[in-house]
Length: 236
Length: 265
Image (tube, rainbow over all chains, first blue to last red; front, side, top):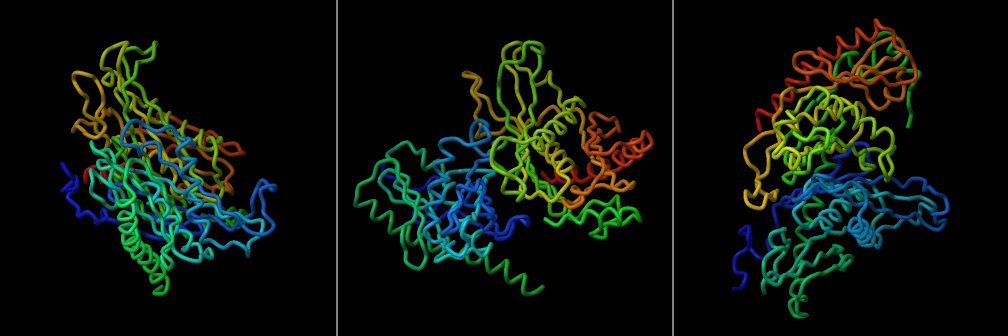
């Protein structure tokens, strides 16, 4: 009854086919596209720019604002009403916190850096794809960062610890846990951690070890996306 | 942003544009891609120059309206995402998004592009409703034409989802091979007037410098199904005639792009 074979045939620690690209939205100061399986996230960064309303300005440092939205046709069921939901607000908040620790806007008092993430199609792991894309977009925009942030979900499906769950695994008819994680690259610190489902402490630690290796793979793709963009610029 | 309004106006007078295009040339590349979202029943991504727009079709079964109890319905919504331009802010749709959605909607609705009666399942009880959402990824000008292209392409690419014959519930994860009952294929072309000259496919800068614009939706037979004049300045009857001529011709050109994209589908 144990989960011996994944629904899509992947190895337990294998990520879904992933693609990352920088500079996909010319209007933005920085942007990125991340595809993880059938989840696609676009991220755009605008700023540092003047923050309105003024009372929100911080004279000591610039601030980061994050917006997360699933496009109305991006859910696997009925159409999603556009606009903020409780879910999208919470996700925007945790994404903001996961990135904020590594961004240094002390040189930009009173300013804001806006990060917008929108998804045209989703199959679980949207906040992780959002963070990975936003992190590339921030670097693309030249925002001062202490470290790159890479994100992937880990979890446990019917007793087996796995990386990068797809929706069919999250919805698997057994005990499942889903743990979105974001990690810095150099220091391997956790900047996003959520969990729902059921898991023992022992398996949680195994899952986090798996996340540590998995986020390294995401990091490689993020860096490749940035190198691809700027290498093209040099050739021109 | 630097609007270069004067330069654009002066150049227009002698038939020239800032980016060197002819007045009636669309930007390149024009690229249409279908099935960009597996969660939508139909979807498309349209690129005209640097402008990128997506459209997704969702289908739902609902009770028909009382005055059209033997018909389904359509709804078109547009989201000008703050992701796509520094000019857009988060929040409920502003007037620009509302106009874009309504003009795109009228072009398709008034052409009777979809056979509404074929969308009916049980008169007075159940019918298919087609919801098209248009979202901007990068607004570099000419959203009217891009939105119309995306909406039509997504409609043509759409397939009905499976319906459980016993419960009547939609299984959105399984698509049939049945397309929507499309009768006509309207496309919108917007013609802009700048300093007495007519031109198509404006950039964002040109959109800050125009005197008047006219969006004209027409089907493959050249029948006009919707128009919308915009801008601060008036148009003469003669100008409207010229604008319609341009729109009909350009719609033919754009239609070949739609056919290419959907054929490869």
